[in-house]
Image (tube, rainbow, N blue to C red; front, side):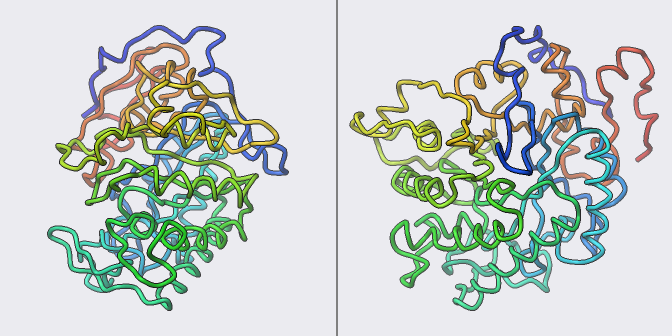
Length: 418
């Protein structure tokens, strides 16, 4: 069923000089430089891929093409880098020839509309719930999640194998025509599990302090960058994420040095994709950082933009000032993407302050032309959660654009049949 228009998200068009209407360069100064607008599609798991092969279907080709726009960046749904990385039978992979060929249809369709698409490289770790009996649940440490198998602690050989798998996935993504690649280092999945002490109790080179816990992250980034280069590589981080039993007592103690190291290692890095500190799962929050910590990604933005906040007593004190940031420069070209909580009502103000590209997910499901709706002030449709993970085309490719609604050519449920 076609979603209803969300009156809350009806608004006028942005001001003509709004930052939201100004593009930003991804990979600035490189041979792969791309000009993108400020509304990106966040990675969205939809569980509509082919069981058995885990290859995207022709529905996915339509889905991504519908949401492509000139200078628009799409990040595809999280995609398994190997069979060992998986565990969800209808989530996609990028480790077989059939999968690569299917993704090539998707990237071609996006490019035909003048858009760009990045692959999000994914491994579950302890988040593997055992749905696929052929995939063993492994993790940095044998700390299980509720209703999940207790994972086997990964050996150094396991770690080497996963690093290799990420590199091979990058090679396959390149063959499939993706414009770049984003490492999924957020939301309680494998890379995130290594990064945070709540899930990493190792005593070898991959555990202990932040240097040890980030070693896997940087080895994987090196493997990906070896294929795509710094300029076409991104990483997603969720410093304040509580999903899947994550959240450090002091996230700044981990993520500030990690982002500092990232900037130092990769001065031409494509983008960092932050999940904002908000409850995006819809579940009640039960975990909190230690008292006195103000939850904000602004200190991390400051590091990427080269802003010195050392005069403030703590990162929290700096964050409380609600600072504003400049756009990327030739000296500091890394773009910042921001996800979670953005909609047509608040995105203009957020982008004006931060200079970020806003990655929007749920509203993109119900509005394939979301950037146009926001840029022109058109009404935005409310999403329907009941169709997020249901099989088939309903709630997937049956949502009209504003133009289709406006000219009266869209007949509800006529475009596709369940």
